[in-house]
Length: 327
Ligand code: NAP
Image (cartoon, rainbow, N blue to C red; front, side, top):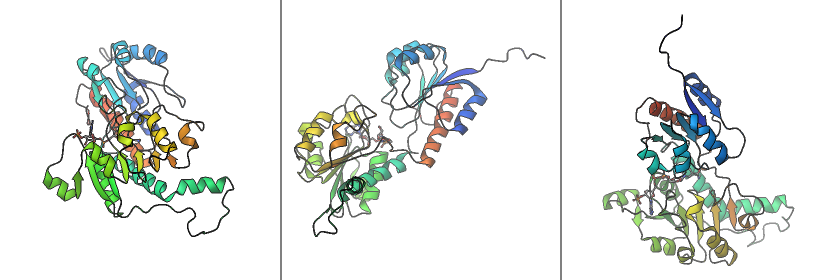
């Protein structure tokens, strides 16, 4: 017997696939469509597909701008597989009363771990040594001052953006004997600073006093190219810059100039102005730069939790409820 009034499944578009368990869960509830392949969904295709969708699951490299949201006339929920949601015109989405979910907290540990890994790698020149061996250039054995790097113990780490990830990096860094200063728009209460053993610094101070500056602010109009030559030139000649937040926070041209001219000692970068970058990118040609392909949250455990939350956020949003983590 046909059940009257049985509603049709809502439609959900994924701009990239998720883990099998998450796809299966989505299939149980919705009619889903997945853009496959290693590259982001072309805008033209996105504009066409979004028209029929009730929900959208998107990734950091997508561009869910006003035009896309406008085209999604049925859209009720956008669920981002990331903590950063700068890829979504959230202001316009809110105007349209579209719910937006994202995945904070669960990726804090993984991203902080990667940041510490990059700092140690950069200062102790591990990847540089790896390249040397693979290129068959390891000739000198244990010279008194060959392949020497820097120790992190006693160094000052300046954290730009002392939120979830910034705080987790501070805690881990302190176990290596690193001193931590930080900059936020809003200073923490003194009691909290004391408990966390950190000191507030102005933006200029952070760049001039640190041996390592690590970026953990979200990308926004305010942080667009915030780290440019005027801040970089304040850094110590032996200082390092680390970015595991978003590429466009750094004015890339200014950093390349500073690295080439040895205005600073080196950089470790997980994120870039335009991703992916290839072997011909200027950064890929510099020995004093360590690169990783945007893997801040890429641990099996974290990515599974992110998928779980992304699906749950979407389900709640499509049911007219508030996502677990709502923008
Ligand atoms: P969060 O908890 O929101 O922390 C961000 C901090 O930045 C806040 O303490 C905020 O404090 C500060 N801030 C914001 N705008 C600022 C500005 N204009 N100047 C100075 N400080 C500013 O975010 P989170 O979870 O730590 O994540 C941070 C970012 O990391 C994300 O937005 C994402 O883009 C990036 N991320 C990257 C990866 C990766 O794969 N590489 C993985 C995870 C996250 P105030 O409001 O007081 O300024």
